[in-house]
Length: 478
Length: 94
Image 1 (cartoon, rainbow over the protein chains, first blue to last red):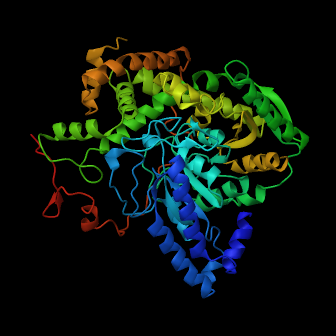
Image 2 (cartoon, rainbow over the protein chains, first blue to last red):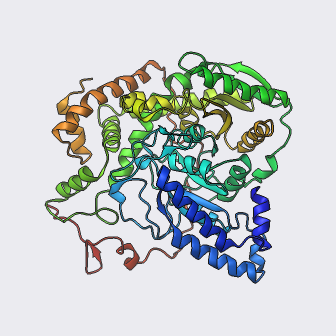
């Protein structure tokens, strides 16, 4: 059932909101037993929300009329704070942390009548592309199409649950590709908005200049609906953009005739699995059949230097952000023993996972006197050049296209053999739009060996509407 | 650039992380490989290029200088067991 039809049925009480919520919670529990998508199922909160909404619906309260997510189940990536629900960003160092407030995006979902069903699992603090770097004590989510394979990451739980649980939309978060990459491996839509479009208030930081909250869902309509709800200026986030909000749903099913698509030359060919390439070209063809014009473009700098630039910025920012986690005011604490330094070191060493330690060390190194100019500052300058290259491309094109990942969802047994650097390379296609704060969308374009393949569309700052238009045209063609 | 055991242990100490012998042996070659790869940024000519600390242009965002409601002391202290007389209690300073 389409989401807007469902909301109508909830409003006119054809579907009972409480019974429906109970049903989805039960389904989530069943799915979770098999696939590990949720760190926490927030049953109590969900039923409370459903109960109070039911009263309003029964009383035909005026406030119900315009609620855009009435009765829709929304899961929240663990790094996004939900009041009174344990929010750990998948890390043991935040075990037991129940935020005293809602993140801006979560608050907006609640205001619009969305039901929060739980916290989805992720790589610890978002540090990974396969959701295998989950924190100590967390479970690894399994691909909905093949349990021996990864969901992708870091929003792996969000992507898997979006594929498996109907009638649900997910709030994901991306720093270097963590929305579109798992969306690609799980065959769902993932929309990472322009940096600053959605407030980061209440997001457990990974990298301040890169983090973006965005929607993931089984169809483009749901992604368009949710991005409309969570966008908007928020005084509590100093990097929130003060721009007019758009009606993203108005871009759905609109003609794409005459739109110009740039096929990123360097993103095809060597290193890209043939099945992936074939299906992405099919997606491009579908757009052409709808009247879009596609042409090749070279984007050398972002493909060649994107990974290095991204990891320098991301680890530098992460190493400062994570300095606050030391067992003092919230989260994991240990017995107060020794000096400040000894205590902090003990808490951090015992509770951070391997990848977190690695990234903190790389980031601390990149910011140290003597190395700062060569690594951290250099990356910030290359970022400027990358933005310039994209801006030039967007003078000619409405959107750029590449595969979202160069491979099909990998097997856990293969991931285990990768070095950290090989692991980082999975983000090849996705890091550059993230470094440059550009909105990007994963569009499922086909299946090979029963595994989904995704096409990545990237647009200029604040042009999410174009992505929705194009994504909707591909969906229509199916 | 010499990435050796001494440097790794120093950086870890600065970051308040104590590495076990096993971690040092595991991380050292991994960090070498990663940092070598990241060093390729030096190939890019960035002379005269300004750094982008944010990906979009942002102006300083200031709020009005007005008193507003904020987290109560009780709430702020509610998430830890380490507290005393309305304050956070930390480990000894020296």
